[in-house]
Length: 184
Image (cartoon, rainbow, N blue to C red; front, side, top):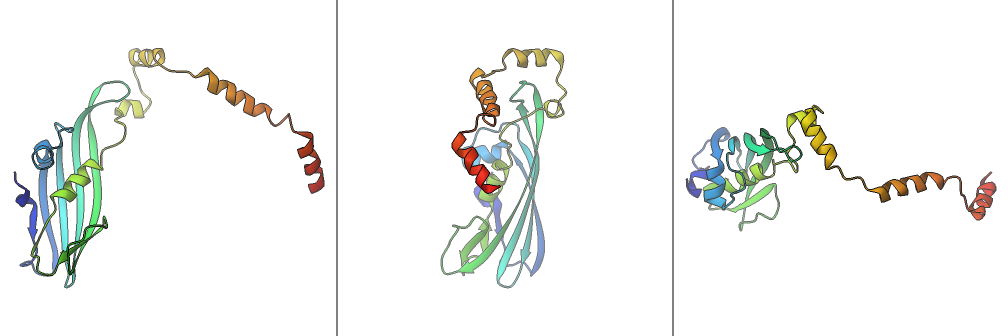
């Protein structure tokens, strides 16, 4: 796997829509980006290029699976991943990728490398917390629930603060009550 495998040569393509498909796995991330945190990743990335006279429009769509462990229960499951991204490529005097959704290529360019965009599409599709589908549905077996209850942290100070907040309505400073009388 090489970086040039993800070059799309657009100079010879006719105006219109063109589809490109990429099967991506963990070796893509490890080899090209030295990213080793997603072993077992399998994903399909579909890229639709719409070539126009003055610009290119890319639509990236990714679906994949990643074997992970639930952050709450520790049970293994396959996390479904999906993400979409659009990129507009314009032509100008110099290369500019300051904007996330607009890429400016020099007028003489004839190809664009999309490996970085595929990498970002995959990494940004990861959830912040991996939750087993049973946990999300509220269906946890008794053994796991007992273990979770055992390690649940209850902060007594927060409960006291909540109780104090409810009493504030009854203890109104007399100066404020006089101001309320002025409104009536």
